[in-house]
Amino acid sequence: MSRKSNDAVISAWVRLMRAQHAVLSHVETALKREDLPPLVWYDVLLEVGRKPERGLRPFEIEQDMLLPQYGLSRLLGRIEQAGYVKREKCTDDGRGHRIFITPAGQAVADRMWPVYRAAVQKALGDRLTARETAQLDGLLGKLSDPPAQ
Image 1 (cartoon, one colour):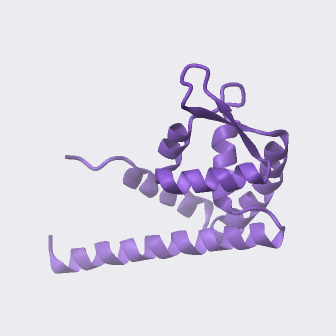
Image 2 (tube, helix red, strand yellow):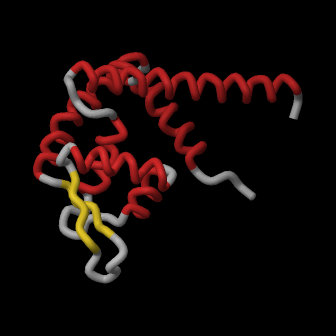
């Protein structure tokens, strides 16, 4: 790889990280302005809310969200303390727990989504044409696939 193409790769990486930070900051600010919990809470509530009957084991949430176990334990504790999720012992494993979304948790997630969606639209969607958005989606899709060995 030439030095010039390597410089372009590094520049693209930096811009990708800056863009992610800018959009996430915009979303977090919008949620805070509406006196709503942080974005990561929404992500947990969304994952747990997808399996309302059976709940999720913490390791399943960890895998879906790519969070370290110690960080997830603290996060779940704060969300549980707020009354948005509840823990129940697993019937098939007495040591394990399942996490369930509560009605209050579903209600706050329902309030968060329109704020989240509007903030992403303003920070990203309003700044790109439909063609650019489709292009970006395609490029990021390529980056999301695992690299060839």
